[in-house]
Image (cartoon, rainbow, N blue to C red):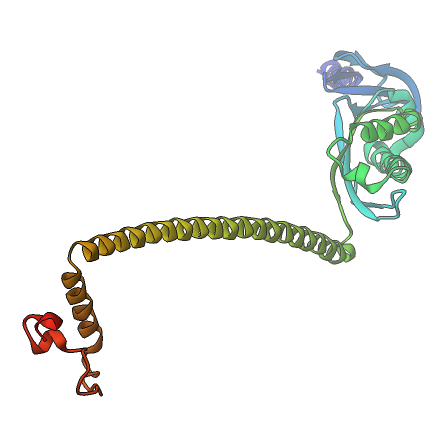
Length: 292
C-alpha cells in the first residue's frame, strides 16, 4: 500500500514531464526553442518536437504572408505639390533567428512598427524624387517597385522579407482641395469658353453661307420673274398691237373701259371735266366716238 502511494505520484510527474517536453509546430508557424533566453534550436518544419521541461521554452512566430497598412503619409514631390499617400505592404518572417535577435521579446508588433518606419522613409524618399503627375498617374508600378526594393535591404536586418508594396490612394491635403477645385473649375470654364467661341464662329460661318445662299436664290428668282414679266409684257403688247392693227375701234373701246374702271372707284366718284371732254364718249352713245 505504501509503495503504491509512492509510485503513483512519481508516475504522474513522469507523465507530466513527458508531456511538457513535447510540442507541436503547425504548418503556419515557425518555432524557436530558447534556453535561458538564448536560441538553442529552430523548428521550421511542421510536426512533433521535444524540449527540456522547465529549462527550455518555445516561442512561436507566424510563417504566413502578413499585411501592414501604413498610416496616411504626407509627401512632397519634386514640384512641391503636397500629397497624402495611403499604402500597404505584404511581408513575411524569413529568418526567425535574425527576427528574434532584432526585436527581442517585442515580437511581431514591434517588428511591424519598425517596418512602418522603414516603409515611410522609403516612400518619402522615392516619391520626393518624382513629380506629382508621376505619382497621380495610373502607371505607378515602377514607383512601388522602387519603394519595395529600397525597403528590402533594411527589412532584412529584422529578419523580414518584403514581398510587395502598394499605393492604395493618393490625394491632395484637405487644405489644398478647394484651391485645386477652383483651378480645375477655371480650366473647365476656359475650355467651355473656347468651345463656345468655336461654336459661335462656326455658327456665323453657317449663317453667312445661308444668307449668301438666300441672296443668290432670291436674286435668281427675281431675275427669272423679271424675265417672265418682260416676256409677258412683250406678249401682251404684241397682242395689243395686233388687236389695235386688226380693229382700231375695239382697241379704243378697251382703253376707254380700262380708264373708266381705274377712275370710277369707291370714294373717287367726283370728277371735274370740261363739257366737251371726250372721256365719256362711250357712255354717251352706244357707238362711241364714231357716233358723234
